[in-house]
Image 1 (cartoon, rainbow, N blue to C red):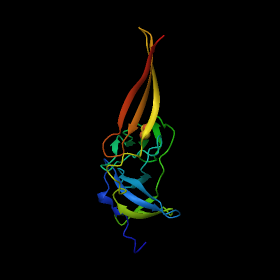
Image 2: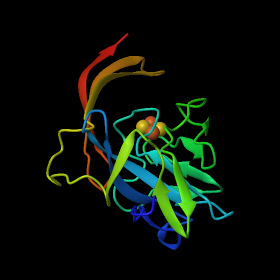
Image 3: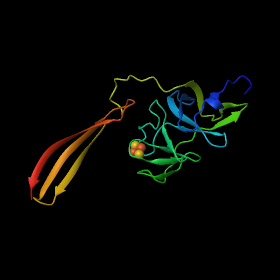
Image 4: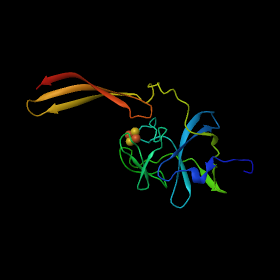
Length: 178
Ligand code: FES
């Protein structure tokens, strides 16, 4: 590791948020993002930057992930993952675990020790900020009102990949009295 400059100085890794880095999967050449955060004991943990509910949703969208009470939170639907283990103990993917990227602290430097990846740079993947094609979803919703008794059928479309929250549009398709 003598020539390895490492990922970053430990002191640069936040304790109340995350640092975004870009890695390359050695086997495929695919680039991906990981998030780093520093624990109270000075150690650093790293995970792939993806929620385990919808894996195309990033925990850190470029301005740091939300961290509260020792957990990293997904802003999308509120899943909470323990920082020490990545285990989700609250939310729609409860029981799942974030994908760990192995790192070690040595000489006040965070080093990548995971042999599956190579460090590319600090910061995230280069994206087109106008590209709203990723992370889009579509679905139906049904609602029933008690009185008058009406069944509503609608469509929701969610788009957005940028630093702001995804945008959701709902469209009413039909409303029928029953
Ligand atoms: S996408 Fe993260 S909780 Fe749903």
